[in-house]
Every structure is written in C-alpha cells, then in structure tokens.
Image: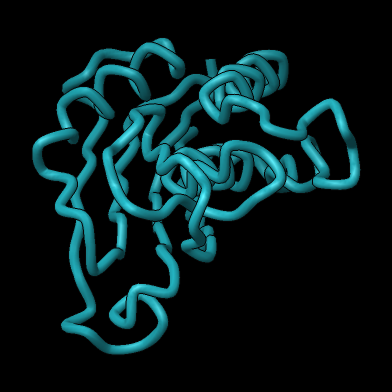
Length: 158
C-alpha cells in the first residue's frame, strides 16, 4: 500500500543566524529563526514523511519546548523520523521538495542537498528532488522576510 504526505514549513529570516537548507550551509547575510537550526527545507521533509504515515508532525516528535532540540541539526531529526517510519512498517519511495525564497539562489547547492537528504533517508539520490522558486517579490517570501517550503513524499508498507 502506498501513502502520500505533504509537508509545509516557514521560518523568518533574521540577522545573526547561519542559513542551513537541506543540511547545507549557504552563504547569505541572514539566516532562519528557529529553535533548532531552522532548516525549513528539512523540516518540510520530516512533516511530509510523518504525515504520510499518520504519525503526527515534527512539533509532536521534537517540540520547541524541549531544550534537547535547541540548536539541533535537522538532518539528525530527519534520521529519527526515518527510524520512526521504519518502526511503523514504512519505507520511503521518493521525496519532492520546493523551497520558496526570493534570495539566495540555491541552484548551486541543490545537488549537495539531495545527497544529504538521500543519505539521511537511506534512499538513493535519484529518489530525492530539490528545487526552488521565487514569488516574484510578492508576500513575505518575496519581501525577503522569510522562506517557506513544501514537500511531497511517497511511502509504502514494507
């Protein structure tokens, strides 16, 4: 049996933080605000996978009220989500991610993101898609106030 999940996350851009997307540090004048490393892209992947299995969301498993997750590496959280999926009898089919941000351009980093995400998920790189779009300077992402990300994931029973 196949299942599909959708994940969505959003974080505000702020001064004084590193920008981590898909586990890759990207040179930029701002970073994303959050309890963990605020990797909006990886958080959307976590939510898509957990949602496909009807196992809640990232906030249920890694609450921002728990200091253990302060500054956490989101790829480690993703690895834990994959472990939880496995314990519940699921395997990952594929992942398709769309980052929404006015800047910076992420095309120079997408291959490295795909490598890191595929490794964390225990699947081949050809099963992970990472792409980005702008919103033509509209809304909070277009104004450069933040970034958002959508992810669709296919999982199946072992």
